Length: 355
Image 1 (tube, rainbow, N blue to C red):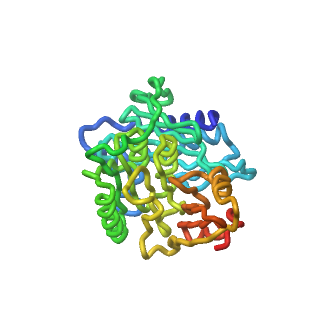
Image 2: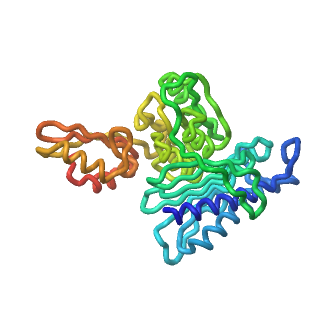
Image 3: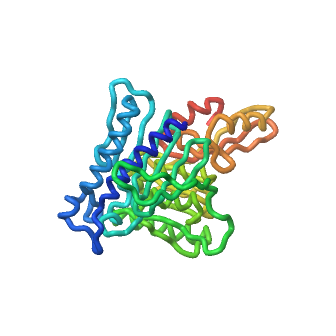
């Protein structure tokens, strides 16, 4: 894990060093500064800085891990002839609009996955002088870095281990963001109103960077985070950092949000994560099903599943399903909520269950 974390941090630092070259202006950057064009809307910018940062990140990853696959925002997926099984998800500039307008909440984000498990992540925010990182089972940390010089990351201050927000404190803050598509925004507004009430939040914050929102839940600056329709590279690193800080996390079930959107959730929301549903017009959707396993040792069977699969609250996560177990005298009742297109995988993983 340490080796993957070292590569992740080096790659994120390389991307952030490119972002640190942003001109020091008192007003938002113009097209001459950026070489900018739009992607999906007038608010969704892509700039020369995005591409240069992704080039720098990819150079580090390909230098150290030439047989790993890479999935990035600007250049998409890169496959290799002899894949190692490891796949990197990178966002070279999360918070592009902030970057353009001179707001400091932007970063480079890098995470690596192996066989469906996120194993290491690093996020560097050069204008904030902050870094966050985590490994699976190794905890999450942050440190101050100071302003980055190109190609020469500064020596970090003593890192601080993260433990999430203070539970039950007053004045709770919910972080979120909104889609560029007006129809999707309408669904988001409705659901956020529901969350604000259920979670007893006092206010909402929007930094403009999903990665940094997740990091700030991990370090306790914010109390919870909920956003609908993120791409994988938006949440990959931040979700692992929040999870390793002890924060409950729900990742989207689908990698690409354009057609199959889902929630990215972190923290205590007043509603169980698996109960927050997707848009009713979702082309695949989520489903809930119930099954049972006949066994005289229900507690033992449940304990075995809790060891086999990642924990989520009182249950586990299997094939992007949230799964709960209830022991009875002669059987165990299994309740699963998750994406319909992953149902077959769930059934294969829990082959003893009769659905």
